[in-house]
Length: 305
Image (tube, rainbow, N blue to C red; front, side, top):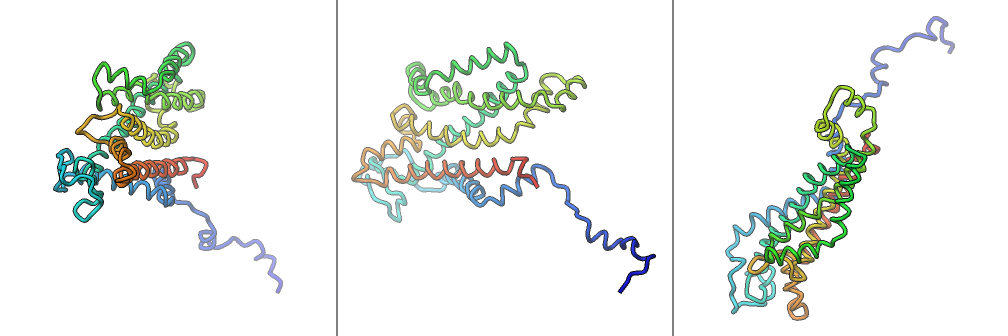
């Protein structure tokens, strides 16, 4: 059936235009990142796992009847049971209570390293990248010098000066653990500081502090957050290694590294004394890695829809 000439180019009704119009509701970058993070089941599982461990380690010991430092030699090296879920160690102490108690120290060291990276590493790297020239060269040579000395050497020297214990580990980590973040942030700042928005900020009279904290760091936040989530399990492994070789916390304090070291001595006869603290280290490290992978995908602007 032929269409009359006067109706061939008739405008569409408004309701049809509205039906065919493609509209996208506005969404902020943070909301979109959280939506994509939740869509990653492993990342969400990692976040739930970390929350459970934090609650268990910092609140759980207050609810159990056992004292993590009191020895009971008559009940030493008992296997897992209804009374002692993880068994007992060589001094008769409840291993479940000791694992929760040790998690406080291991997680505290890990989060301290993350906080140090966030405060010192980000500020130092952003300042070096923004200043450029000879100041950038001097500041990064200082980072190179710090990185040339292994962390174990720092811990040994501090143990001689300050005594062996948790304080020497905190100070050693405070000396060296921010350098990787400083390098990352410096590289990001060097790539960002010649962008148009930075030139506009300078033209409007923004000072260096405003340039760093208002413009550069927020635009480099995605790689900073990802590096932060990966650095926390590295710090936890570092503490566990130092405690395993005898440079960590001293008795009667405990960390997962100390428990693993003590359990290793009786591995053949009492394998559960090593299995449970080692499992805690592995599970928490995997959880942080899952979170890091999820954040890396969620904060990537190329994947935003």
